Image (tube, rainbow, N blue to C red; front, side, top):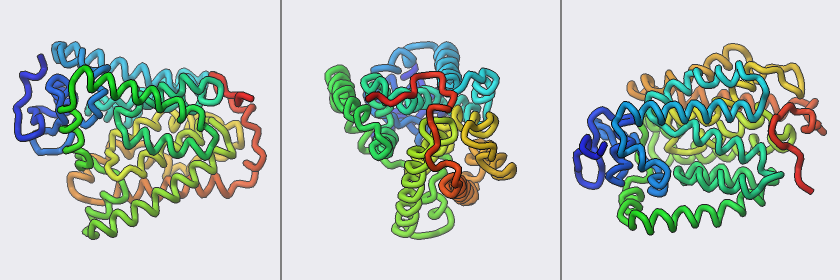
Length: 349
């Protein structure tokens, strides 16, 4: 068992090596994990063990290879759901965000695919979308915020269908593993990730007091979510609007880490490199697009040096991209049926 790699220290599983090893060891012992520096490397909700426990019983090499391959496949499928461009789907799998995902062992490919299925198929298949949203509750704060932004853009049936699925997952985890994993998880909730990218984290790096950092984060989050919902309502479910929505959700989370940017990688790759069906404007100017593309790699060294450049740059680029889309007059009355989405996109009557 991978649990042999773990040392118990208070209520956490301190794992030599961190990353993927920490994740599988934590799954095996049922506790949140941190590496030797105390930075959280695995903090999924306990019902994630229902899906991931087999990895904790594997040899490390096999577990790492299978886990990485599955997440890359999920990234590929997420991009393929939005566009027939297989070359860009492959590009998403080798993007900086994907490489950071592989290095950290984050379940980003799985979460990206679940989020993509929700927004692409949510109107036609609310039950399927609800199940995908429920599976995203392995990171509860992410699923909750994603569900909230889906409500004003018309996905209330998918959100409603996610409730019984979520309750079933919670019940199954308690029946199978007991309540202790939940106690440990809740005790560790809110811990700072190793490469924090939220505006609140940047404010704390700059020396602002906690109340000021949280106020700044709340103001930014409200503006980003409202702007992303407006753009999505006007454009419909196409790569550009999906990328902006997922980036808004990720950056609104106060405990967002750099590896979380991989959730938007499939949609962002298509938004940056594929022709837009709405107009011929790029999503961002070249310099801003390049910075956004490589930002996952920059998050780790800048966070380690306590420089707030990455959180500030990410927030500024997202708000600028949202402002460009909202201000563009050609989007009024935009026909979402013209968007080349491979999956079902028509709204159910």
